[in-house]
Image (tube, rainbow, N blue to C red; front, side, top):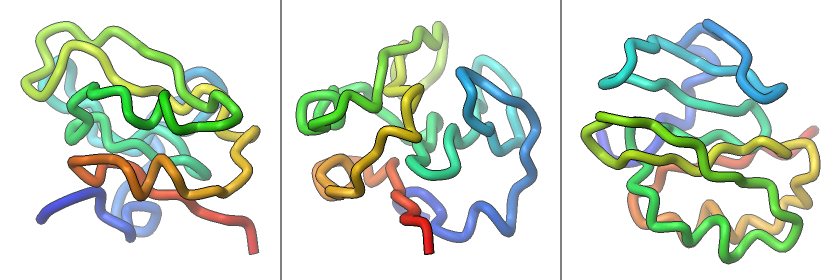
Length: 106
């Protein structure tokens, strides 16, 4: 599989909360960190911390969070303010490993 699983909300369970957003598991630190967020979802296991999402987001949805010893990168772009998302899709389109999926409310 390449990129975030677009069906993760039906194939994975919410296992915890982090910074007011849901985390879908499994989560087994430091190697498996799950998917963070339900509106702005970031697959922490795919995120390579290149920072493009932080650079392109006009409303500062993301913050860095340290993830020591994770194989992909030692920090991740955490969607700490996912409720501020304006659905411009810039982060999803620009993410090199396709680790972000935006879910617009219906």
